[in-house]
Image (tube, rainbow, N blue to C red; front, side, top):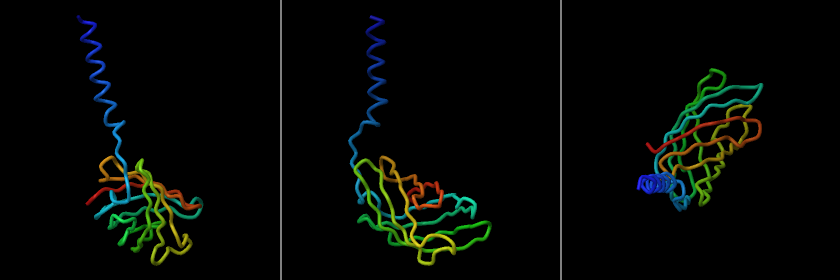
Length: 142
């Protein structure tokens, strides 16, 4: 009887632990809608270190229609605006192509990112995929 109880408890715990991971949530651009806050840190190796925080507004149709960030590059602060086009894959990964309205001198005219959405789409983690920049950040619904 003790052995059966142990097996039952093990099966129940295994199902409880695996269920959230194996959930069949399918993501799309519709999961990225509303206002989000974000922050990131990074560097252009041998050139600059930087950190930023800001707000984006996504339309749920694959666009970031408004973006503003406060960024410090090598200790010099500035503010910039941008828009993005995004893609979202069913597994929650995606990419963003973001041309800043006024690129920081010495930085690319278009920035690219890879991201992963949380299961409910309320938060995300991202990395820069623009050659020559190392960026790591995160964001969440405001």
